[in-house]
Image (cartoon, rainbow, N blue to C red; front, side):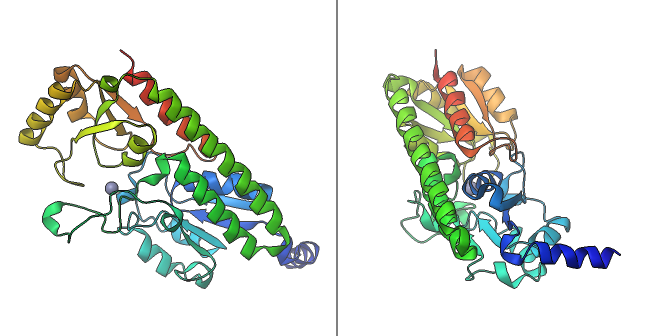
Length: 299
Ligand SMILES: [Zn+2]
């Protein structure tokens, strides 16, 4: 009986009418995909905004999720290198392997910052050799990714190509408008109120978008935990530049930021680590990032 109803279902819904299964490594990418695909796609995220995307948990359940995907969206620039490759290999899903139409690397459509100028070595810490991979905090990057996702969906489901591309163009326009209005608002802040200290070098695109000035990072090198000597130097830099905000995503440890904030008279602003997918749209997420910083930078 079960078998029969399954066959009837196949007849009623030919392959082209079933929603495409989209899997994104990060919740903000998933949120973009849902906006672009609408009811024509089913989207899942492999990680939550509370997880550090460098070291996400390679849970076996994620292999099952990847196995049924038609499209995989990755951040790229080696952000997921510590956990995604074995999952992808074990998924046994040829449709979403690197180099296929079902694999989209978001970093390839973004204007990159933080590309190392010279050769890199281990002493520099966990530096991403292709450039800084933390671009999802910038709606201008989100706009370009939306267009790339629209094009990828259009290739996989040609019947709805126009819808995907229209949705992508509408989202890109909305995000570019948001980027402009927020950077105009931040431009009203006096220069002295635009200095901040960050935990990891993960907010450079946000700093660039909003015209802020990143004075120092609490990590002495990317991926290396703060040490007393480095923190003392940061405190000195904070005093010199009159820094009023220490900003970090929710998944980084907060003890150093709290202590340094108390000694250096700065506010610790804890930012969401990504869109609260599936309940929060990407545009609202980046707006919330800007608002949290704007509030923090007020006297
Ligand atoms: Zn990083």
